[in-house]
Amino acid sequence: MIQVSNLSKTYLIWKVPVSRLLVPLMVRLLAKIFPGYAVRLTQKYCQPVQALSDISFSVATGDSLGIIGLNGSGKSTLLQIIAGTLQATRGSVEVVGRVAALLELGSGFDPEFTGRENVFLNASILGLTRIEIEERYDAIVAFADIGDFIDRPVKTYSSGMMVRLAFAVQVHVDPDVLIVDEALSVGDARFQAKALTKIEEILKRGTTLLFVGHDLSAVKSFCNRAILLDKGRIIKSGIPDDVIADYLYIMQKERIESAGLSVALTRHDKGFVATGYDVVNAEFIGMGNHATLAYGDQITLVVEIQKTIVVEAPFLILDVVDNRGMQLSGRRIEIPDFVGVKHLKVRLGCTFQKGIYRIRMRLVSAPTIESTMMMSRYDELLSIEMIDDVRDKFTGLFPLPMDIHWEEQQ
Image (cartoon, rainbow, N blue to C red; front, side):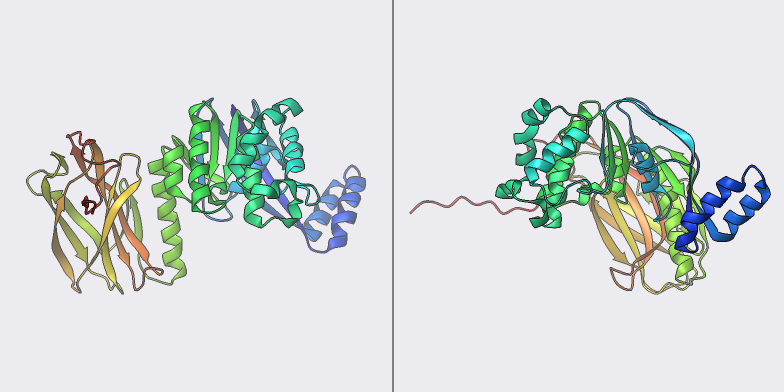
């Protein structure tokens, strides 16, 4: 559905506004006569910024690709070129079918038009006929849930109302390709949940998804492949877990360097580690790295931690994640002040539904929750398989404490 070949994008930053008009004109006039001078003239008044360099990938029908990277890595530029709202400098993009792009939601709305008029305008731009729009209109209005404002000018809308209406239009055009750029944070929590459910419904119909976002849980949930962009280049491509691990490594390495900490990070196959502050070994007593358990069983986890460097506020974070990498629960455990190696024992009560779960470990420096600095990360050291089907006991993945009491009527 999507084929991107040798794609590059260069932005020209002009030193003075008038140069933007005059220099290209002079270059065009002098290019054939004095080509060398034309190049020097451009370089003198213009600074090129390379946003994308030789990007190539393909997305098959019904496939879902996540694109992640630090701010400024070129993610939004890439999506805008694929969506057709921006031209590439070099390379080509081929997209088959109707495209719905959740980029800058509401940017195509006319503020003087009513919500109803903008629905018809926006949907027609996306390729729907008037009859198709009328068939979908009630569903769009119900999904946006903005009440009587649908018949008022968009200039009277709050920013949340406008993006909700724009989102509703995009997801009701039955797209062959859905492009999402940080659009799942629209509206309040209730609308976000509705938006996630709608996207899941669209994907089940076989729609091809291209997703960009900093929400790594959403990337794991929606995408079966991912690519990592850094400074306009693809530096990693593969399954989401591997690509996300590289992304977190790069992000934490930059954070540690910018904080001026003299800590060396090393990437390994299960995450990354800070030299002198790491997990030497972890296992379940009597079971090794994998435990097969029945509902309600208890198990003891032993973690061997090495700390030979000074860490301001050391903590071990233990997380329980499901087979898609979604975090279910976790615990922050304060690490005492020591130099060398210490052993920690943690007793777990396993009350999960049938399935496979993993224990994720993170060693952090956390003077406060907001200033937590992750220094070592281990994604797949340990796993647990629950073999009992306990859907008759509770819904979801694990039970919540509840006090249930029937009162007799007086």
